[in-house]
Length: 330
Image (cartoon, rainbow, N blue to C red; front, side, top):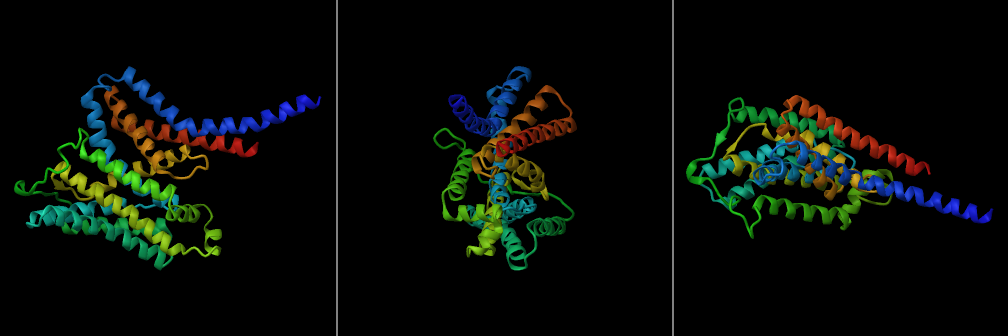
């Protein structure tokens, strides 16, 4: 009798760990399943041209924006103004180059313009105590209106042919520079979030804000840095986008907002505590891009693509939520 009880206790202890492992493997398994499905069903999915386009035209920009969004969500908030930061960066980049300034000056000016959006959010959130949702929503509306005023109702501003840079076109060591840029940004942001003191403060703000406050943590400082970091990443995306299309297109950054949020929340399934993390975010971006690309090749209507993508996101998140509740119940 005693041996059976001991074996039962061991099984009881082992089951939650097995379920927890399955929860963490949910996203990689789902990604491989979707990848395999489209490799079989979608014509040309595995062609070098399609995969190159998938990475350079779809993955890069969303990944950069989502990396910044990871910080905002990890801190328990959300940044609805990432598109505004991207657009202001693109606008400054085009204006400075067309005015005859050098590439370095244009890059610095673009990063500053995009980061000022985060600084404005930081003032609203950390200075005035406005919730991140409302603060960044207000910034989104203001940014949209300002862009319409500056661009005569939303007209693109093109880079002059003589000043169009080609710095991101030529690969380095055989790897396209946009992918290297994603890797560098993800590495820096990932190490700071997972290993650094600032990352611990961000996660404390997101999970236990009251405990963090009573422990002496300066929440306003952490919140301010979070939204500046989010805007900075979007500013980088603005430069990459401008160099890809040789133009500033007003309000184009808003196209990345919802997918960036979705990618970050999908990526939380990769963490055993359900926290936002950079590795999970990048895998979430790949998951979304592969799904959209595969459905396009199959021939699905754009609107049905959105329905299917949303359903997949919900399926992954719901299954992860239920599995975690089962682990906690045991």
